[in-house]
Image (cartoon, rainbow, N blue to C red; front, side, top):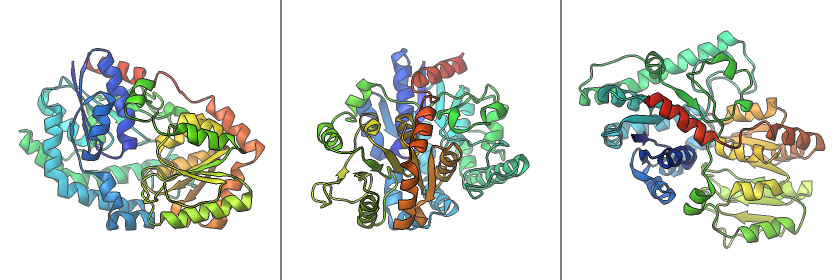
Length: 425
Protein backbone atom coordinates (compact mmCIF):
# COMPACT_ATOMS: atom_id res chain seq x y z
CA UNK A 1 0.00 0.00 0.00
CA UNK A 2 1.24 3.49 -0.84
CA UNK A 3 0.85 5.81 2.16
CA UNK A 4 1.31 9.58 1.96
CA UNK A 5 1.96 11.64 5.11
CA UNK A 6 1.89 15.42 4.49
CA UNK A 7 3.25 17.34 7.50
CA UNK A 8 4.43 20.77 8.47
CA UNK A 9 5.71 22.36 11.69
CA UNK A 10 8.80 21.90 13.85
CA UNK A 11 10.90 18.81 14.52
CA UNK A 12 8.62 18.07 17.45
CA UNK A 13 5.75 17.74 14.97
CA UNK A 14 7.70 15.62 12.50
CA UNK A 15 9.78 13.22 14.61
CA UNK A 16 6.95 11.16 16.17
CA UNK A 17 5.32 10.74 12.77
CA UNK A 18 8.63 9.52 11.34
CA UNK A 19 8.41 6.74 13.94
CA UNK A 20 5.00 5.76 12.53
CA UNK A 21 6.27 5.97 8.95
CA UNK A 22 9.18 3.66 9.74
CA UNK A 23 6.84 1.13 11.35
CA UNK A 24 4.56 1.21 8.29
CA UNK A 25 7.57 0.77 5.99
CA UNK A 26 8.73 -2.18 8.12
CA UNK A 27 5.35 -3.78 7.41
CA UNK A 28 5.96 -3.52 3.68
CA UNK A 29 4.17 -0.28 2.83
CA UNK A 30 5.54 2.40 0.51
CA UNK A 31 5.69 5.56 2.63
CA UNK A 32 6.25 9.13 1.42
CA UNK A 33 6.45 11.87 4.03
CA UNK A 34 6.08 15.58 3.33
CA UNK A 35 8.15 17.82 5.62
CA UNK A 36 9.23 21.48 5.88
CA UNK A 37 12.37 22.27 3.89
CA UNK A 38 14.56 22.44 7.00
CA UNK A 39 13.51 18.92 8.04
CA UNK A 40 13.62 16.99 4.76
CA UNK A 41 17.19 15.85 5.42
CA UNK A 42 16.17 14.67 8.89
CA UNK A 43 13.40 12.51 7.40
CA UNK A 44 15.59 11.01 4.70
CA UNK A 45 18.38 10.33 7.21
CA UNK A 46 15.86 8.31 9.22
CA UNK A 47 15.22 6.19 6.13
CA UNK A 48 11.99 7.52 4.65
CA UNK A 49 11.35 9.10 1.27
CA UNK A 50 10.54 12.80 1.69
CA UNK A 51 9.39 15.83 -0.25
CA UNK A 52 9.08 19.47 0.77
CA UNK A 53 5.72 20.33 2.32
CA UNK A 54 4.94 23.55 4.12
CA UNK A 55 6.98 26.57 5.19
CA UNK A 56 10.02 26.68 7.46
CA UNK A 57 8.41 27.38 10.84
CA UNK A 58 11.81 27.66 12.52
CA UNK A 59 12.62 30.56 10.21
CA UNK A 60 9.30 32.19 11.07
CA UNK A 61 9.83 31.87 14.83
CA UNK A 62 13.38 33.20 14.51
CA UNK A 63 12.28 36.27 12.52
CA UNK A 64 11.79 39.64 14.21
CA UNK A 65 8.00 39.31 14.02
CA UNK A 66 8.18 35.75 15.35
CA UNK A 67 10.44 36.77 18.21
CA UNK A 68 8.06 39.60 19.16
CA UNK A 69 5.05 37.27 19.11
CA UNK A 70 6.85 34.68 21.22
CA UNK A 71 8.02 37.36 23.64
CA UNK A 72 4.42 38.54 24.04
CA UNK A 73 3.36 35.03 24.98
CA UNK A 74 -0.02 35.62 23.34
CA UNK A 75 -1.44 32.53 21.63
CA UNK A 76 -3.87 34.55 19.51
CA UNK A 77 -1.09 36.85 18.30
CA UNK A 78 1.13 33.88 17.44
CA UNK A 79 -1.77 32.16 15.66
CA UNK A 80 -2.32 35.33 13.63
CA UNK A 81 1.37 35.36 12.69
CA UNK A 82 1.27 31.72 11.60
CA UNK A 83 -2.00 32.35 9.74
CA UNK A 84 -0.37 35.20 7.82
CA UNK A 85 2.56 32.98 6.90
CA UNK A 86 0.20 30.23 5.79
CA UNK A 87 -1.87 32.74 3.81
CA UNK A 88 1.24 33.88 1.93
CA UNK A 89 2.17 30.24 1.44
CA UNK A 90 -1.36 28.94 0.84
CA UNK A 91 -1.22 28.31 -2.91
CA UNK A 92 2.19 26.64 -2.69
CA UNK A 93 1.07 24.59 0.31
CA UNK A 94 -1.93 23.35 -1.68
CA UNK A 95 0.36 22.24 -4.50
CA UNK A 96 2.79 20.55 -2.11
CA UNK A 97 0.08 18.57 -0.32
CA UNK A 98 -1.33 17.43 -3.66
CA UNK A 99 2.15 16.44 -4.79
CA UNK A 100 2.92 14.45 -1.65
CA UNK A 101 -0.43 12.64 -1.81
CA UNK A 102 -0.35 11.85 -5.53
CA UNK A 103 -1.07 8.18 -6.23
CA UNK A 104 -1.52 7.29 -2.55
CA UNK A 105 -3.82 4.52 -1.39
CA UNK A 106 -4.20 6.16 2.02
CA UNK A 107 -3.33 9.54 3.53
CA UNK A 108 -2.14 10.15 7.09
CA UNK A 109 -2.40 13.81 8.12
CA UNK A 110 -1.63 15.78 11.27
CA UNK A 111 -3.38 18.46 13.28
CA UNK A 112 -2.14 21.19 10.92
CA UNK A 113 -2.54 19.38 7.59
CA UNK A 114 -5.79 17.47 8.10
CA UNK A 115 -7.91 20.27 6.59
CA UNK A 116 -6.13 20.15 3.24
CA UNK A 117 -5.62 16.38 3.36
CA UNK A 118 -9.34 15.77 3.85
CA UNK A 119 -10.15 17.51 0.54
CA UNK A 120 -7.35 15.69 -1.27
CA UNK A 121 -8.54 12.34 0.13
CA UNK A 122 -12.10 13.17 -0.95
CA UNK A 123 -10.97 13.99 -4.49
CA UNK A 124 -8.83 10.83 -4.71
CA UNK A 125 -11.42 8.59 -3.08
CA UNK A 126 -8.94 7.20 -0.55
CA UNK A 127 -9.12 6.75 3.26
CA UNK A 128 -7.76 9.38 5.64
CA UNK A 129 -6.31 9.08 9.15
CA UNK A 130 -5.40 12.10 11.30
CA UNK A 131 -2.84 12.33 14.10
CA UNK A 132 -3.38 14.71 17.02
CA UNK A 133 -0.51 15.85 19.27
CA UNK A 134 -2.84 17.31 21.92
CA UNK A 135 -6.61 17.48 22.54
CA UNK A 136 -7.95 19.42 19.57
CA UNK A 137 -11.58 18.36 19.40
CA UNK A 138 -14.59 19.48 21.40
CA UNK A 139 -14.96 17.97 24.85
CA UNK A 140 -16.30 18.89 28.25
CA UNK A 141 -13.15 18.09 30.23
CA UNK A 142 -10.78 20.73 28.84
CA UNK A 143 -11.16 24.07 27.03
CA UNK A 144 -9.54 24.89 23.72
CA UNK A 145 -5.82 25.47 24.50
CA UNK A 146 -5.18 29.16 25.06
CA UNK A 147 -8.84 30.15 25.20
CA UNK A 148 -8.93 30.53 28.98
CA UNK A 149 -6.32 30.93 31.73
CA UNK A 150 -4.75 27.47 32.05
CA UNK A 151 -5.29 27.23 35.81
CA UNK A 152 -9.06 27.64 35.46
CA UNK A 153 -11.27 24.59 35.83
CA UNK A 154 -14.50 25.63 34.08
CA UNK A 155 -17.65 23.51 33.83
CA UNK A 156 -18.25 21.32 30.77
CA UNK A 157 -20.61 23.76 28.96
CA UNK A 158 -17.98 26.51 29.12
CA UNK A 159 -15.29 24.15 27.83
CA UNK A 160 -17.49 23.10 24.92
CA UNK A 161 -18.28 26.73 24.12
CA UNK A 162 -14.57 27.50 23.70
CA UNK A 163 -14.30 24.67 21.18
CA UNK A 164 -17.33 25.89 19.24
CA UNK A 165 -15.76 29.35 19.00
CA UNK A 166 -12.30 28.04 18.04
CA UNK A 167 -13.56 25.61 15.40
CA UNK A 168 -15.71 28.28 13.78
CA UNK A 169 -12.81 30.75 13.83
CA UNK A 170 -10.57 28.20 12.13
CA UNK A 171 -13.30 27.52 9.56
CA UNK A 172 -13.75 31.20 8.74
CA UNK A 173 -10.01 32.01 8.59
CA UNK A 174 -8.92 29.10 6.42
CA UNK A 175 -11.98 28.27 4.30
CA UNK A 176 -11.01 30.64 1.50
CA UNK A 177 -7.70 28.82 0.99
CA UNK A 178 -9.32 25.42 1.33
CA UNK A 179 -11.94 26.27 -1.28
CA UNK A 180 -9.14 27.35 -3.63
CA UNK A 181 -7.71 23.88 -3.10
CA UNK A 182 -11.09 22.26 -3.68
CA UNK A 183 -11.46 24.18 -6.95
CA UNK A 184 -8.05 22.92 -8.07
CA UNK A 185 -9.17 19.38 -7.22
CA UNK A 186 -12.47 19.78 -9.10
CA UNK A 187 -14.54 19.65 -5.91
CA UNK A 188 -17.48 21.92 -5.02
CA UNK A 189 -17.05 24.62 -2.40
CA UNK A 190 -17.64 23.64 1.20
CA UNK A 191 -18.24 25.76 4.27
CA UNK A 192 -18.08 22.88 6.73
CA UNK A 193 -15.42 22.88 9.43
CA UNK A 194 -12.68 20.26 9.42
CA UNK A 195 -13.90 18.63 12.64
CA UNK A 196 -17.39 18.07 11.21
CA UNK A 197 -16.01 16.84 7.87
CA UNK A 198 -13.83 14.23 9.55
CA UNK A 199 -16.67 13.21 11.87
CA UNK A 200 -19.03 12.75 8.90
CA UNK A 201 -16.41 10.57 7.20
CA UNK A 202 -15.76 8.55 10.38
CA UNK A 203 -12.06 9.39 10.01
CA UNK A 204 -9.87 7.95 12.79
CA UNK A 205 -8.19 10.68 14.86
CA UNK A 206 -5.29 9.03 16.66
CA UNK A 207 -4.22 10.76 19.86
CA UNK A 208 -0.43 10.39 19.85
CA UNK A 209 0.04 11.53 23.44
CA UNK A 210 -0.51 9.69 26.69
CA UNK A 211 -4.01 9.36 28.18
CA UNK A 212 -2.49 9.65 31.67
CA UNK A 213 -1.84 13.33 30.89
CA UNK A 214 -5.53 14.09 30.33
CA UNK A 215 -7.60 12.25 32.95
CA UNK A 216 -11.30 12.33 32.17
CA UNK A 217 -10.86 12.88 28.43
CA UNK A 218 -10.66 9.29 27.08
CA UNK A 219 -14.02 8.54 28.67
CA UNK A 220 -15.63 11.35 26.63
CA UNK A 221 -14.47 10.08 23.26
CA UNK A 222 -15.31 6.90 21.37
CA UNK A 223 -13.15 4.43 19.46
CA UNK A 224 -12.67 6.95 16.60
CA UNK A 225 -10.18 8.79 18.84
CA UNK A 226 -7.89 6.11 20.25
CA UNK A 227 -4.88 6.95 22.42
CA UNK A 228 -1.54 5.35 21.56
CA UNK A 229 0.93 7.18 23.77
CA UNK A 230 3.88 9.15 22.39
CA UNK A 231 5.54 7.75 19.24
CA UNK A 232 9.29 7.29 19.70
CA UNK A 233 12.04 6.36 17.24
CA UNK A 234 13.77 3.02 17.63
CA UNK A 235 17.51 2.92 18.27
CA UNK A 236 18.40 2.29 14.60
CA UNK A 237 16.53 5.41 13.50
CA UNK A 238 17.96 7.46 16.34
CA UNK A 239 21.45 6.39 15.33
CA UNK A 240 20.70 7.27 11.71
CA UNK A 241 19.53 10.83 12.52
CA UNK A 242 22.43 11.42 14.89
CA UNK A 243 20.42 11.47 18.10
CA UNK A 244 22.78 8.97 19.70
CA UNK A 245 25.87 10.69 18.30
CA UNK A 246 27.67 13.59 19.91
CA UNK A 247 29.65 13.72 23.07
CA UNK A 248 27.33 11.96 25.50
CA UNK A 249 30.38 10.69 27.37
CA UNK A 250 31.34 14.29 28.17
CA UNK A 251 27.82 15.15 29.35
CA UNK A 252 27.43 11.99 31.41
CA UNK A 253 30.85 12.29 33.01
CA UNK A 254 30.05 15.88 34.02
CA UNK A 255 26.74 14.76 35.52
CA UNK A 256 28.30 11.85 37.40
CA UNK A 257 31.03 14.09 38.85
CA UNK A 258 28.57 15.79 41.21
CA UNK A 259 25.01 15.94 42.45
CA UNK A 260 22.26 15.30 39.84
CA UNK A 261 21.65 18.59 37.97
CA UNK A 262 18.46 20.40 37.08
CA UNK A 263 17.89 20.45 33.31
CA UNK A 264 16.98 23.76 31.65
CA UNK A 265 15.98 23.83 27.97
CA UNK A 266 13.48 25.42 25.63
CA UNK A 267 13.52 23.08 22.64
CA UNK A 268 12.20 24.57 19.41
CA UNK A 269 11.30 27.92 20.98
CA UNK A 270 13.98 30.47 19.97
CA UNK A 271 14.96 32.65 22.92
CA UNK A 272 15.13 36.39 22.21
CA UNK A 273 17.95 37.00 24.72
CA UNK A 274 19.57 33.65 25.46
CA UNK A 275 22.41 35.30 27.36
CA UNK A 276 19.98 36.88 29.84
CA UNK A 277 18.15 33.59 30.34
CA UNK A 278 21.45 31.78 30.93
CA UNK A 279 22.46 34.43 33.48
CA UNK A 280 19.12 33.95 35.25
CA UNK A 281 19.61 30.17 35.32
CA UNK A 282 23.10 30.66 36.79
CA UNK A 283 21.78 33.03 39.47
CA UNK A 284 18.93 30.73 40.48
CA UNK A 285 21.13 27.63 40.49
CA UNK A 286 23.64 29.35 42.77
CA UNK A 287 20.90 30.46 45.18
CA UNK A 288 19.46 26.95 45.39
CA UNK A 289 22.84 25.24 45.47
CA UNK A 290 22.11 23.04 42.46
CA UNK A 291 24.01 22.24 39.29
CA UNK A 292 22.44 23.13 35.95
CA UNK A 293 22.51 21.36 32.60
CA UNK A 294 21.42 23.88 29.97
CA UNK A 295 20.31 22.96 26.43
CA UNK A 296 20.96 25.71 23.89
CA UNK A 297 18.06 24.61 21.65
CA UNK A 298 17.40 27.12 18.87
CA UNK A 299 19.16 29.92 20.75
CA UNK A 300 22.18 31.77 19.41
CA UNK A 301 24.47 30.71 22.27
CA UNK A 302 28.01 29.89 21.18
CA UNK A 303 28.28 26.62 23.08
CA UNK A 304 32.01 26.21 22.48
CA UNK A 305 32.89 29.63 23.85
CA UNK A 306 30.23 30.39 26.45
CA UNK A 307 31.79 30.99 29.88
CA UNK A 308 29.89 29.63 32.86
CA UNK A 309 30.53 28.41 36.39
CA UNK A 310 31.85 24.82 36.67
CA UNK A 311 28.48 23.81 38.14
CA UNK A 312 26.74 24.81 34.88
CA UNK A 313 27.15 22.98 31.59
CA UNK A 314 25.73 24.25 28.29
CA UNK A 315 25.14 21.56 25.66
CA UNK A 316 23.69 21.06 22.20
CA UNK A 317 21.39 18.21 21.11
CA UNK A 318 21.47 15.01 23.14
CA UNK A 319 19.41 11.88 23.73
CA UNK A 320 16.95 12.69 26.51
CA UNK A 321 16.55 9.10 27.64
CA UNK A 322 20.30 8.81 28.23
CA UNK A 323 20.57 12.02 30.23
CA UNK A 324 17.26 12.75 31.98
CA UNK A 325 17.34 9.71 34.32
CA UNK A 326 20.52 11.19 35.80
CA UNK A 327 18.91 14.59 36.49
CA UNK A 328 17.07 15.87 39.56
CA UNK A 329 14.35 17.87 37.77
CA UNK A 330 13.55 19.49 34.43
CA UNK A 331 12.61 22.99 33.32
CA UNK A 332 11.42 23.40 29.72
CA UNK A 333 8.82 24.94 27.41
CA UNK A 334 6.28 22.10 27.60
CA UNK A 335 6.50 20.72 24.07
CA UNK A 336 4.91 17.28 24.20
CA UNK A 337 8.09 15.45 23.14
CA UNK A 338 10.27 16.99 25.85
CA UNK A 339 7.43 16.73 28.37
CA UNK A 340 7.06 13.01 27.68
CA UNK A 341 10.79 12.47 28.09
CA UNK A 342 11.03 14.35 31.39
CA UNK A 343 7.95 12.68 32.86
CA UNK A 344 8.88 9.16 31.78
CA UNK A 345 12.27 9.71 33.47
CA UNK A 346 10.35 10.46 36.67
CA UNK A 347 11.51 14.08 36.79
CA UNK A 348 9.46 16.76 38.55
CA UNK A 349 8.94 19.28 35.75
CA UNK A 350 8.52 23.05 35.59
CA UNK A 351 6.82 24.05 32.33
CA UNK A 352 7.72 27.60 31.24
CA UNK A 353 5.11 27.77 28.50
CA UNK A 354 5.33 30.03 25.48
CA UNK A 355 2.16 29.47 23.47
CA UNK A 356 -0.24 27.11 21.69
CA UNK A 357 -0.88 23.94 23.74
CA UNK A 358 2.12 24.44 26.05
CA UNK A 359 0.12 26.32 28.75
CA UNK A 360 -2.33 23.43 28.79
CA UNK A 361 0.46 20.93 29.44
CA UNK A 362 1.83 23.22 32.13
CA UNK A 363 -1.56 23.28 33.84
CA UNK A 364 -1.78 19.49 33.61
CA UNK A 365 1.64 19.06 35.22
CA UNK A 366 0.39 21.11 38.17
CA UNK A 367 -2.96 19.30 38.39
CA UNK A 368 -1.27 15.91 38.33
CA UNK A 369 1.09 16.96 41.14
CA UNK A 370 4.24 16.22 39.14
CA UNK A 371 5.50 19.76 38.65
CA UNK A 372 4.67 23.42 38.26
CA UNK A 373 3.77 25.93 35.55
CA UNK A 374 5.08 29.40 34.76
CA UNK A 375 4.44 31.47 31.65
CA UNK A 376 7.71 32.29 29.91
CA UNK A 377 6.66 35.95 29.66
CA UNK A 378 6.47 36.06 33.48
CA UNK A 379 9.89 34.51 33.94
CA UNK A 380 12.05 36.25 36.53
CA UNK A 381 14.82 35.08 38.82
CA UNK A 382 12.47 35.09 41.81
CA UNK A 383 9.71 33.15 40.05
CA UNK A 384 12.16 30.69 38.51
CA UNK A 385 13.78 30.11 41.90
CA UNK A 386 10.40 29.48 43.49
CA UNK A 387 9.37 27.12 40.69
CA UNK A 388 12.57 25.09 40.73
CA UNK A 389 12.56 24.91 44.54
CA UNK A 390 9.05 23.41 44.38
CA UNK A 391 10.43 20.55 42.28
CA UNK A 392 13.21 19.59 44.65
CA UNK A 393 11.18 18.06 47.46
CA UNK A 394 11.10 14.31 48.19
CA UNK A 395 7.30 14.38 47.90
CA UNK A 396 7.35 15.90 44.40
CA UNK A 397 10.04 13.49 43.24
CA UNK A 398 8.09 10.52 44.61
CA UNK A 399 4.90 11.69 42.88
CA UNK A 400 6.75 12.08 39.56
CA UNK A 401 8.31 8.63 39.84
CA UNK A 402 4.93 7.03 40.52
CA UNK A 403 3.36 8.90 37.60
CA UNK A 404 6.15 7.77 35.25
CA UNK A 405 5.00 4.17 35.71
CA UNK A 406 1.57 5.02 34.29
CA UNK A 407 2.95 6.28 30.96
CA UNK A 408 2.94 4.12 27.84
CA UNK A 409 6.56 3.78 26.76
CA UNK A 410 6.41 0.79 24.40
CA UNK A 411 4.47 -0.15 21.29
CA UNK A 412 2.88 3.21 20.46
CA UNK A 413 4.08 3.27 16.84
CA UNK A 414 2.93 -0.31 16.30
CA UNK A 415 -0.51 0.48 17.72
CA UNK A 416 -0.82 3.55 15.50
CA UNK A 417 0.21 1.47 12.47
CA UNK A 418 -2.47 -1.10 13.33
CA UNK A 419 -5.09 1.67 13.28
CA UNK A 420 -3.81 3.02 9.94
CA UNK A 421 -3.95 -0.46 8.37
CA UNK A 422 -7.45 -1.03 9.75
CA UNK A 423 -8.58 2.25 8.17
CA UNK A 424 -7.31 1.04 4.81
CA UNK A 425 -9.38 -2.12 5.13
